[in-house]
Amino acid sequence: MERDAVPGEMLATRGRGFGHRYLPFAYPALVITAAVIVFPWLFTVYMSLHDWKIGQDREFVGLANFVRLAKDVRFLESIGHTLYFTALAVVLPLVFGTAAALVFNERFPLRGLFRAVFILPMMATPVAVALVWTMMFHPQLGVLNYLLSTVGLPPQLWVYSPGTVIPSLVMVEVWHWTPLVMLIVLGGLAAAPTEPYDSAKIDGANGWQIFRHITLPLIMPFLLVAAVIRTIDALKAFDTIFVITGGGPGTASETINIFLYLQAFSFYNIGYASAVTIVFFVIIVALAVVLLWLRQKAKWS
Amino acid sequence: MVMSVSLRRFARKLAFGFAVFVIVSPAILVILWMLSLALKNEVDNMAYPPVFVPSTFNFQNFFDVIERNRLDLYFLNSILVSGFATLVAIAVGVPAAYGIAKAQAHKLAVLTLIARITPALSYLIPLYILFQWIGLTGTIWPIAITHLVITLPIFIYVMIGFFESLPQELEEAALIDGCTLWQAFRHVALPLARPGIVVGGILSIIFSWNNFVFAAILGGRQTRTLPVAVFNMLTFEQVAWGPLAAAALLVTLPVLVLTLLIQKEIVGGLTAGGVKGG
Image 1 (tube, helix red, strand yellow):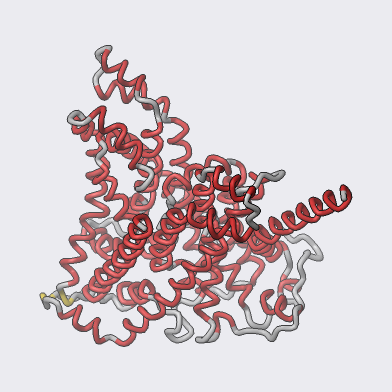
Image 2: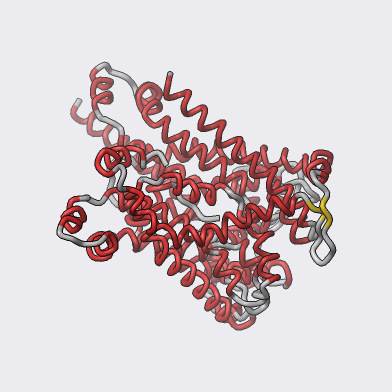
């Protein structure tokens, strides 16, 4: 997205007017994209306007599905769960990822190996990871409660209690996706100029002052990119939640995505589920736009 | 004075080493715990306080889990799905990325962005119905085709960045010498793009391999992929922790080993676009 801008502008002065000759190269991909991305979108809009259960007749109902959604308490609660989960699953990886990036920006022996180990969680298969965490969360035999007991803390119910289920799932999400934030911020640190640091050292600034007044402003654009990506991914989080709790206990961890899954593939209300899809997409785009707007604002000031 | 300076430097090094240790330990501990669960017998796995190092290394879990759950079949399915989705992504993605980079048609690249933003489940409802209509349900094709939603955007995104970083002069010389656009692409740009294709292809394979939700909905008894098979062990059968952890490890081990082996390339590809599947 952003990084395309600079080389793109350089090319533009050279090849404007001839660029369209290259478009046929993209046609096969466009056909596939149309089939697996555009068609589903149009069809979703069509379905959302119908009362449609798999295996039954469909009936055009206009916006009735959306009206029903606005009054569906379970759906409204799922929006709350999603926002709670997302807020934590964006902020915590940003904090930890930045700290890790500051460390990996230093030169030290075996840095490449340690960095590879650090990014293993984001490459690992989510279902496999979720299985291991499920066993770790076990209230009687789980290793997490054992670790708590070694430091004198009382055992927790983790994902088995409505009060702690979402923070527990956030823990898995933070473990899983902090590496992605680290990589983005590390890219920002690598691109940062060295002069401000030299003069700050001469002025006798301490570590925190240097971070607060030099490093943080320099990496701010990258942090905002990471925030956008994290927001989109956290809103869409599915695999680990589905495997570990399936939305439970009760509906305590039912996010929009889980609600969508249950409507579509457990209850087969595909008309209703399509309406959920559209509302969900609007929420994702709206939050992404807000963050991008914040980014523009940060640029101007 | 000299003494205290070197002492302070030593203390700082020690603190830094400790920071590195703290930062990588969550990743290491969870993976080691998976390994430990997979290698322990049931007595050790059900012990409290937990046993960390197995009393006997027990590879039986792996054999049991492969045999009882037909993991060999699902392994093959996973390879077919990821392989197909990645090969198609390469075949159409390389020229597409080249065309988009050359024509600066970044509006077309927005399509890949939409694919990145849209929740996977929203493709699944319409495609599920479509595959029912054309009678492909029950075969491996619906899974392989829908995995293009994962592989194609990742691959195109990595390749656009790669083609834009290549020097223009060689192709321009080829065009002046009378090559067609296709020949300039085929004989000049394509050979130069090989490292990018490898990185993009590997990332496509990994994220397709890891994907759960497409095969969970579209896969049948014969056609499910490894992550789905492992998930089903959790829900439909009362399986002990050892075999379950062994299955989880079998699914994710190839990815972890690959990441460690070519970490530099993977990090480069990932930073290129902040890509992620699903």
